[in-house]
Length: 595
Image 1 (tube, rainbow, N blue to C red):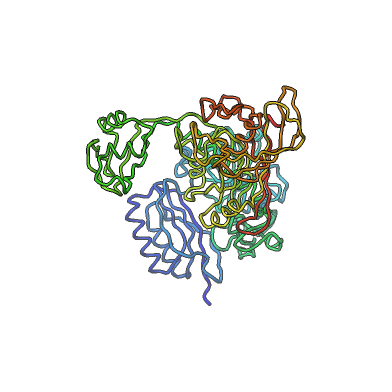
Image 2 (spheres, rainbow, N blue to C red):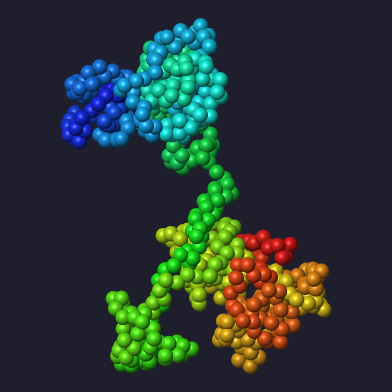
């Protein structure tokens, strides 16, 4: 098998007509079966290329024929295999990204120290601070003994790192080094501009030092940006590899660690399931903060409500259809809306009130430039896996679009955070109720979880603070609840035609203000069940804007963010996990009123 020659080289020089040069070099390298990367810029060239020696020589001859590159000197090593997978020739603003204006190594660089001179200095113990300009993940694989790392993740971070160095270093001899020298070409002049007075750069970098001096005064390997990952002081490929997940270079010892799983994890990125979930949840909370800043419904927008013509309205006027669908709205109002051009067909064209419509046709009612009332959008993720999201819902926050709320809803926030997924809440809480909610990630898992609610297999426990003092420590309410909603979306006790409902209560603590903290266990899942049962028993929930003693109703449905809270909290829930088929329980931390 033929040996593969690897070269690394750079040169700061003015290169004209980069597009034509790029096309020519790419065609020639492919013809010579070379692989690697060549970066071209108006400031020069930077390359890592590998192939058969005679073809490498052809490339070097071609490059040295260019103005300014006649003395291009590469670092050379050999391997038994091709370390690159393809050939790239790219044009860049800089051949090594730095981002500081006025640094031009083609015009000025810092004094250079040869590899042999550095070794002599270190042999003699001369006072010099060695500063490593490379990224942290490169330094991990090896560096000079007692060298000070820059502490950066990218060379663009280097200027800020320099400004964090102790001021006394500015008066001391310092030598900067990197892999091949190119980063030091920019680091040195920058440091001189920052006031460092005795700056040197290692000529040819670590690779040149290995070539001329071996591993003296150096610990470990040198990271390289190709499939070899690491080179030892004899410039031979080592057993080092890179973690597929976090790209950290891994020594042979790192690869023996039980946390290293090829293609999955390494000792530096491995997380236990609990740690991984915590990291995922932290990212979700960041995404939620972005999604609600500002609240999505606080930015004016045009909203549309669908109008679908039912079969019994075929060949009637649009006005008749609108009055039939929205019987609580007057015909005069609909005539005005049509006259304003706010009832549209599906092509956005206004429709007259007297238009004859056909069954199945669809129209839209436009609400222009609306904003929604503020809500509490600080959703807390309690648990997340492939099938399920468990949240602690804040209040006030409607779960779905309704009434005045279309974007300031839990569903809209979740859709934004989990896009392109559209999570499916498996049950509901009132806008004013806080606490634990189960949300499935897909329709498939919704189909596994939802039937558990329908069969009454999901066990729920609430905290509720009520007005007054119940006489018994434990009690219940089994008043039937009407299936149809009334004013403010309310339900009523209906002893003749209502749906069966039962809630069991236990007194937890009488409170100083005359209210009582209860534990409520709903055995059925009727709308507003706990609130209605509490009011029916003569102990309305503290802060309830709808249900009052004696069947009286309040005047608002959804509280404002500054209103006293509804003291009802979905505290605990138990169910069968839709994916693992294991019993699971979750608890939402009690709010301050229940503490």
